[in-house]
Image (cartoon, rainbow, N blue to C red; front, top):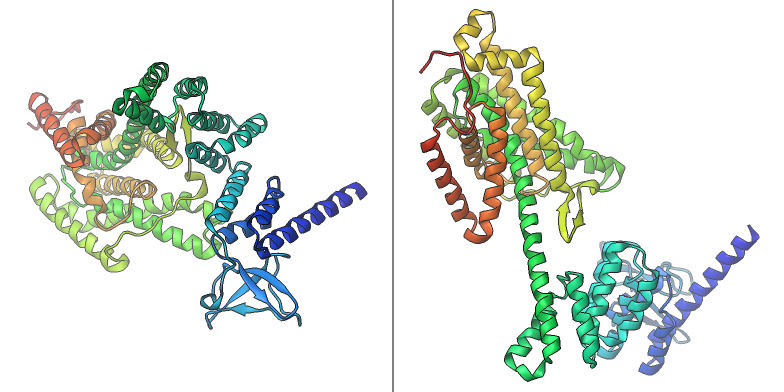
Length: 550
């Protein structure tokens, strides 16, 4: 315990000494003296010293001068009081800035004059802050800082990068250091160093160094004698390797985005396929039921923020609760719609189309009146933010969750339809409504529960969509056409067909968009579906029926 106490006291004394030196540098008017003092901070882990240097570089350090003393401070970032004043924080102690009598001092920012800096001093501080970033506990920030040093191509940063390479153990960051060292070496005066660096960037498939390599080839094109033949040859090989790697990476990223978009379409279209196949109702308000789920997620988020704040363990649970609430809200809205409108329009597609289209406009206007016409902000919990990179292809956690959740919903729907009494009744009514009614199935109740279930699925899809898209009153209109295309293409009321069509349309649309644009891509997909239905009018999978209806 005594040893620990001595170590803590020693660390505190060292930190105080560094803070004193920092203040001394700020009060000095000699640039060389200031640079010498800055060199002492290279290895410091004192966060207050780092914060003070960053504020100094930004011109946010101020001088408080009395007859016998000079002190420096920064303003508290919490904000101003009702008089427009902010409290100061003493850079020497890190505590509230006080007068000699112990009274906490407040200042009006506009009346303060920051301590002078010049471009050379700001450059020296920036280099020092970049070094601090290399030891940041967050590996992503560490990697970004390292790559930034590499792109600066400053040979003075080479020893720092090489020293960091010996102590770094995170594979992602180790690769970034190797890239950065190679990018810096491209500015070397020695040909062999440049050639070695180019080879290294090619072996690493460095997308960060790609533009630097293209710059070498561009220079060779403008002035062939400026780039040695060996360097040009190695650069061309490296560029080809990286271009191929980037092409496959972009394809994989596009495919992943297509799968995640398809997953949302699948959950939305699943309910539509069941209700359309069961009732023969064209529900143009199905997209608005999805908006019900999205806005329910927004409201749930706000409730959790009010109860638990915008961070912490309590807030992290909000999205799980929102999924259940979205299913309930969407199902309730669907049940009301079925009881008040849909049940009078069974097997009357045209009338149901016009009626539900009018309902969709009413629902949109209700949301505009309550939440406004602008999009609302739905934040993701911490466990849905960020991504995991595989072969430099980022896989976002929120999209991965949507895919897994969609597969879970498909499994639950399959079990409902094939392993429960309600599922048996649904399939019986879909195949032959009259015969099912004769055998005692209450078809009207089956219609009601089925429509509510399909609407609940749309609500959950809206909750998922809130994590990857903007939430606004017009959200549903962007998906309703795609959903009907999926239902018709897959085969009305067919679960396997809905799954196949969802992934086919979603992935194809994402692949075509980079080449044809969003609008022309959708038109191309729609044209392809129309041509396919000319050959196979019942869709990919035909639903078998015992019905004698034509």
